[in-house]
Length: 179
Image 1 (cartoon, rainbow, N blue to C red):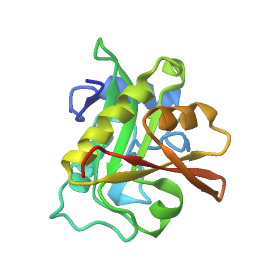
Image 2: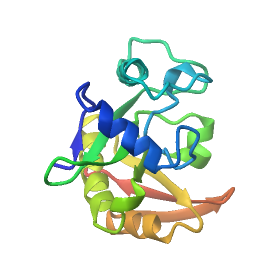
Image 3: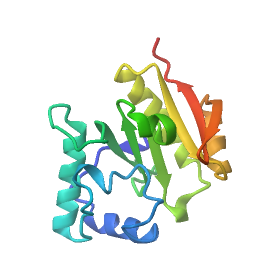
């Protein structure tokens, strides 16, 4: 299974991954939960920052924890390959606020640049649809940038039905298998 829950024993991989994306301010950290429920503060790339980030992810997954305005409860996963190497991030948002309804969708994911075009996104998205179904979500909205042809193909390969484009984002609805 390419989706695993975050664990405290992968600090060095976390730093390596963030740096490969271009650092903590990279817009490519979609699905990482990196900025989390404590914005505008970004976790430091230290062991304490990593522990803080893991706590933020746990808070966002806990329906009893109040979130900042504009945030929704979500489950964060790491995408791993068959050997267990960390290749990306995926966030499954349990509801949509106005911003997510327009631009972000239920699922956000990103594969580290050095591991793209290996099928990791397609497998992770397939598993995320199963997770969404288990949460009682019948269909999910997934968006991608207009020029991200690889992501559009990944979404289509997982049953995505194109709805429209808004603000530079292609919007797809995907049934989770729950009815």
